[in-house]
Structure formats: C-alpha cells, structure tokens
Image (tube, rainbow, N blue to C red):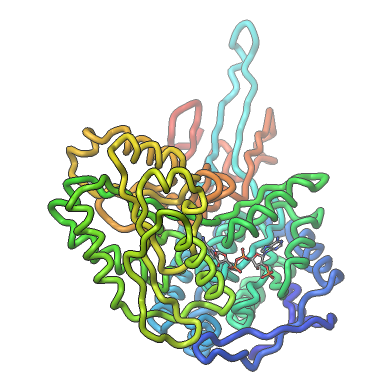
Length: 527
Ligand code: NAP
C-alpha cells in the first residue's frame, strides 16, 4: 500500500505540511498518490538512526549482510505485478523495460551477496614482522577495507529500480557495511515507497539494526541539501544532471568535514566512425545507431549524442541512411513533462546554433510527453568553436560532425569534456593507423567500445561506468558492477595488533578462507 509517508527506519512518519503527487506521463495526469516531504526533524532522525545503526551494522559478518541483500531481492520479487504497474504508471516506461530493470536490480543485489560470501573484496594485505631485520626491525602491519558510515543515495529519474531505492548505489553501500538514507526521486515516489517497504521487511526478517535503511520524500532541493550537509552523513551517491550533481559535490566540499560525492552525470558518448566502417558497413551502422539513439526515448546516460567522421561520400551516405531510418521510428513517452520540456528546449537551442543543419526530425503529431527524435549535422570548425554543441540533450538526439581530416577529428576529441563512453567503428588495422584518434578518445572516457553501440551496460566486475569530469565526479570509481563497493570503504591498517583482536580477514589462520596479499604474494593460505 502506498502511504506517502517517509520511512525512518521501521517508523512511517509524515509530520510535515508540504505535499506533492507523482505524474503519469502517458495519461498526462497526476497520479492518485500524495507524498509528504520530510521535515528537518525527520531528516535528522533518519540520519541519527543511521549513525546508531552503523555502530552495529559495521560489525555484522559478510555472510549475514549477504543474506540481507538476498532477502531484499526476494521481497522485491514478491511485490510482483503491483510494483511493475506502479513503475509503469510513474515512468511511462513499458512492461518489458520494467521487468528487465527489476531483473537487473535483483541481479545486482545478488551479485553483491556473492561478492560478500566470497569475501576477498576487502583487499586484506599483510606484511608479517621481521624482528631480526637490520638496521631496523620490521613491524607487523595488516590492512583491509572498512565501511565509512551512513550514505545518502539520490534516486535517479531514469532508472526507477536499478539506480534508485534499492539500486546499485544502495546495494553497494549496504554490502560495504554502510547504512543508507535514500532521497526518493519525486517523479517515482510510489515505486520508491514500495521498494523501501521490501527493504524494511528484509531488515526485520534478517535482524538488521533499525535505521540501517530509511527512505525520505522530497520534491525540492532543500531536503537533499540538508542530507548532504548533515554532519553524520559520510558519503553520497547521485545519478542525474550535471547541474544537480555538481551542486551537491560543491556543497559536500563546503562542510566542516568534506565528504565524497560520487555523482554520475551527463555524457554525450562520442562515436568515431572511421573510413572503413563507413565504406563497408555504413548502412548497417546507420540503422544500429538510429535504434541506439532512440532506445528508451534516449533517456540513458550512455546515449550516443555525438557521431564523428571524416568528410567523404560514405559519411554523407551514412548520414542519409541514419536520417531516413530515424525519422520514421515511432516516438516513445518520456519519463515526465519536466524531462520532456528539457528535451524540447535542448533540441531547440542546439538546432539554432550557427552552421547546424537538420538531418532528420520526427514530423508527425505525437501524444503529450512523447519524444520526437532529431539528428543534426555540423562541420568540424563550427563544432570546435561552439561548446554549446558539446552539451548533452537528454533524449533521442544526436549530432553528426563532418571533420576535415584526422587531425581535426583528434582535436575535437581532445577538446570534449570527460565522457562515460567512447566508441570506435572501424577495422582492427585502423586502431593503429588512427592511433592518435584512439589515444585521444581513450583519455576522455571510462569505457572504450570497438564496433558496437554504447547503450547497454553489463553489470559485472569488469564494468567501468564512470569517466573524467563531468561524466562523474571521480573517474577512479564505477557506479555499475561489484567494484562499485569501493566507493563506500576506506583502508585501515592495524600495526602490531594482537591476533585475538584482529578482524577475521586479517588473522593468521585466515578463518574466512579469502585471497590475501601476504608478504607481497597472493594466497588463500594460513600464515
Ligand atoms: P536532477 O535535476 O539532477 O535531479 C536528480 C535529483 O537530485 C533529484 O532528486 C533532485 O531533487 C536532486 N537535486 C538536483 N539538484 C539539486 C541541488 N542543487 N541540491 C540538492 N538536490 C538536488 O535530475 P532529474 O530531475 O532526474 O532529471 C533532470 C535532468 O537530468 C534530465 O533532463 C537530464 O538532463 C538529466 N539526467 C541525466 C542523467 C544521466 O544519466 N546523464 C540521468 C537522469 C537525468 P528534487 O527533484 O527533489 O529537486
């Protein structure tokens, strides 16, 4: 049942007087659910309970935490069709996407449970003592990763399951041993409340400390600001706009005790179409990219918003096929009128820049909030001198740049802001013949793709979903895949510590049976 209340640990609370509703973008109407924004007192209570819960939660074994994560996954599944229907109503996204994203969310929770059960993720590193070393004896030093404390997670608009209430940020923080306070996304607060109720059932069933998870409602930036400024909060996970992520990052750095903000923000995901790709497979790539640009109404952080090629007749023919294919794809409903309006404004602004030509635009009537895709083209000189054209338009939109030559192509890539992904379309040989292009691209991105599309992000240990600023605030980390746990921990070294008082991961007899770096060699052995 949707109550519209804040979940402060196990307690449901709505003491404030600011309310809001979510929106059904397909019906173009508000939903029936009303939510009450959290008050300052409720926010303080949620954070204080998280800080108290941390004292216990940080000592709970990885096996118990794994059971907690698996129970969350089961409880989400048990919510069945009513959760799927609520998701669809609040996002306008179709059933297949809802079910797929729920599967991904459950998969993420279980992947972190597997990681905890295996146990080696703590990077246990041991240098045993050498009392007879000269001239100075070597002391016993043992280091491992430990949780940093309560984390605030900002639910994203475009992934109501996988990057929201019990999504990747929450799953990774809970796996690390950190309590989580979710700042529910106002566009899908009912979906968020249902998932929160599943998490809280799992808290109860697995005996986790009260306060390890809270879900806070808000429809304005003040609640998020207060959460980030709260002295007991020790880290932040965010997915959304560059404006929002940067504002929160700056805020966190103004605190008396600055804290890390892992924000995943905008990206135009440049694609470089090298000559052989255009000559040999130009039509095929044009069709693949028409699908990739319009997938999910373009509401993906990996949407290909920029395609770069060297001017030629094969580039012209690629552009023609891309335009013809994309112009007739049926528009898809966007998440919310705010996202739709942002898309319309962004399209208009970039279309009005000097030297820009329209390749294709969906020209039939469409229902309210349905995104009419658009592709523009511009030459390299105009693109280089106008950084407005380098900005993300969130939706089914892309610009194809006709570069003069490989030098101009390289210069353009070097001048782009940091990106989540970059793609090379071409032959194996061209990786060498265009090495300066490839090397420039690699230095701007977190994931470099060869002969593929950037949309579709595999959840696995080797995934890197994070790139140089402003794609993310810290390109050393990923927000997708099990390595995301590293955002919520810090190394602690134990010097000359007695065996009985050491954490299990660092004891001589290796009771957890994990892989450790002992005297510079990886081993599962006891010492
Ligand atoms: P957003 O504006 O960045 O908001 C995301 C969350 O951050 C919301 O919960 C919002 O709170 C909060 N927030 C934003 N600015 C804040 C600030 N200055 N201080 C405190 N909290 C703040 O993103 P959105 O509403 O989800 O979508 C808007 C636009 O973001 C899209 O049109 C798109 O351009 C971009 N976006 C990009 C990606 C991507 O992956 N690249 C994903 C999603 C969205 P309130 O809503 O309560 O104000």
